[in-house]
Length: 81
Length: 276
Picture (cartoon, rainbow over the protein chains, first blue to last red):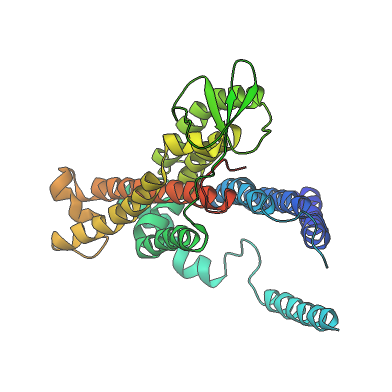
């Protein structure tokens, strides 16, 4: 495990996680959540949990982003609070 | 005010979780309880007992097969829940729009006059204007077969490499969702109807639970695949390996169908019209 790589990816996970909940634009939040899932996938594979990483990549970064986008398209794009 | 209370609660919960993780064993610690009592058994016994090189698959589908069966059921339940929450019967609109594909002219057809549904020249659209997406359609048509092959590989090769029913099923479903996005929901519905999605999702759960019940009928424990040796005509160890493949196929079917089903309902507000 290379700690520099680990550190960078962990920072990106935290940044995209905070950005996903604080951004006003819902489509942006969905995309950021996809980025978050992808970074988590990288973390899993660094830790050697390849099966979990594969699931995270296909479910988290793939299909759930599509489902989020599909749901966002049926709302108004900006949240009101 | 409410936001402040929420923020304090979240910070407190986060601090408590972080404190809790401090008691965890270190990453890869050989002295942790899991590494001392649980892991050695699987590492030593999974190949001689199940002849599956990927220990994760062996644990997931064989040693902890009961859990995985209910994970599949949870996914199936999610699909059913989306169906009951979202699905509504669509009222056929009085005015229909069709696009003449070669010229791009939109036709507005009022009640009485109808065009055949499966005409190659005319495309049913739902609003007056729908963008042309020839590049998207062609690209998707080129990619989708490879995605499907890869998904089948992931399901079938879960014994030896990362992957298995869940991942392969999701990739299968993603291929069909890609088709539905690049074309429209109606075309996807013609390729894989809602009825097919519902039937396939139940079939997957049935395959999994049925395999378990079959083992029970062959005078063994529920989901003890070595009992299948009588039917498959192989030795009990190989039978466990084959049993894992059978239930992985069931899981893949359910996951694929449910992903597509949820997408159909979510992207069209349960109306199954044009979709995204």
